[in-house]
Length: 282
Ligand SMILES: Nc1ncnc2c1ncn2[C@@H]1O[C@H](COP(=O)(O)OP(=O)(O)O)[C@@H](O)[C@H]1O
Ligand SMILES: [Mg+2]
Image (tube, helix red, strand yellow):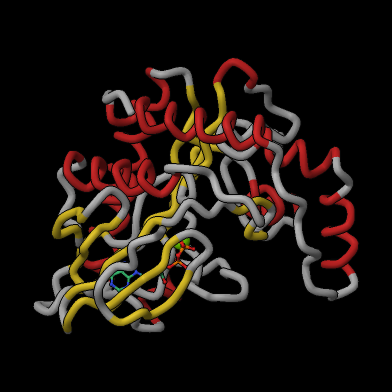
């Protein structure tokens, strides 16, 4: 039986359920839900929530960046300071991938890269902020962030500095364990005093992790945590069905339940991610 955290239920994300503790705190409940291609799957992965909660806590405790975490509660809950979130998603990219690749290919961004090869490494990490939206995050320039009052110029510089720092620190850990940290999304907010703190969480839902062994620019890369699920859903014809539904504006079809071996393999991979970054056994 699931123990519901105390407090008023606020909202359910794809993975987290969020409760309000009192005026100043939120409780993040990291569930065992798993999503692929932005669809929540009908099967849960045992202890995934616990892993992501512990991993997020580990980052907040060790990164040395002011953040919103107050404490963890039980195995899969995190109490955080309620903040007024900055309306920007702070994305740092080390590789030409995802929406950045699409924008570069369309000539919308001018990056100092010679060849526009998918998944090639950028000469240096690139700060690629977007708006925060429930529908689709749109790219936003640093000038727009300031002009629209989302952050002051000083706040933006500081947030950018911290974002690069997190990307570098987490990326180094990854590379020591044979992974590539392709990119990372961070969120910041203001506490009651107006100070900017790192918020949300840090984990495989917020970054792309590629196994270094199979890295090869020029094609799409394997996602360490999600690949077996993605491949399986494709092999079942679900991916094609989903693409067709999206193309014609129909709602996503219900995904098939995952077989036991796939749930186990996914759980094993999440445990490996936790061990990679925390250095602790799960
Ligand atoms: N300290 C905080 N105070 C207020 N809102 C926060 C805080 N940290 C994160 N958030 C917000 O909580 C939400 C997390 O939900 P979401 O990302 O949709 O969940 P999931 O990751 O499960 O999909 C985001 O909108 C994020 O901006
Ligand atoms: Mg999220």
